Image (cartoon, rainbow, N blue to C red):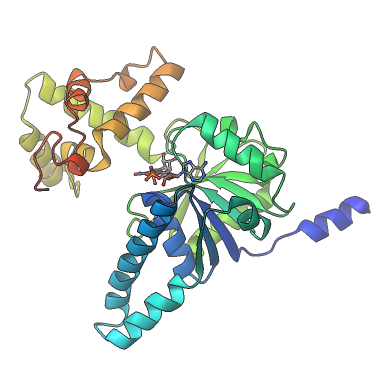
Amino acid sequence: STQIARHLSTHLSVIRNVTVIGGGSMGSGIAQVSAAAGNSVNLVDVSEDVLKKSKKSIETGLSRVGKKLFSGDTAKINDFVNSTVTRINFTPDIISSVKESDLVVEAIVENLDAKQKLFKSIDKEAPEKTIFATNTSSLSCHKIAEVLSRKDRFAGLHFFNPVQVMKLVEVISISDTSKSTHDLVFEWSKTLGKVPVNCRDTPGFIVNQLLVPNLVQAILMIERGDATARDVDTAMKLGAGYPMGPIELADYVGLDVIYFILQGWQKEFPNEPRYQIPETLKKLIEQKKLGVKTGEGFYQYKK
Ligand code: NAI
């Protein structure tokens, strides 16, 4: 009966209070869509400077949404932006944030040690009911969760960039994830206007597992001189219905990001040819040409 009482006291029917940790591009986006859906949100970052920037970018993002919702009615747009932003508490205080949260979504740097350290520190502080989720792209969720005592209340929630626009969320259950945890985060992601899909804890989940090796093949094709970057992109857009060509997409995602993902997978699966790192990718990175964000990658961009 104590077990039943404990179950009842920790049972969570709906997620309302959310803490997002990491105020970079992903964390800001997740905080924005969560607040817009009516959640009370803490957005936590170690850097005050990042918090200031993320507040600005969220305000800009919300006014873009507002313009569409209220077709140019300035008063209504401002009201929407202000009322949504006030639901977000921008703070460096991680401990008091997690203490009041139903759900914590982690979106800090893509580094296993950093993520484990973070989750270990909040595991002790958060109430029993609190569900933890990671937005990792390429690390294995069960490894991140190794440090947790609440493995049943842990899942992967993989959003896509830009979060405000991309409809997909991959929901990753590890073997310990309970059904109620899964169902709660799955349903919660729908309340954000997203479409959740389920995937086991495998490298790159669904999208990146299919996409990243495809980008590699496109780069290798250029490297061999089979076709130019422009022609590869044109071909895949007009011949396969891709909204962006693979090379354009690589530049957009960031060549360093792709390199980093491949490196991690290669370490784990050294004999997998699909994870080989193309020489061109290494060269461009050495030249600090990382894609759109540095003004040049495979293509040049106006700064
Ligand atoms: P980012 O580098 O823009 O932001 C990370 C933020 O975390 C920084 O502002 C940093 O100050 C903060 N941070 C670092 N350690 C912290 C700690 N211990 N406590 C609190 N804040 C801390 O990174 P981005 O691109 O937003 O990615 C975040 C996560 O989302 C990564 O795991 C990444 O793999 C994943 N992801 C990224 C996507 C992308 O396209 N950028 C897509 C989907 C997932």
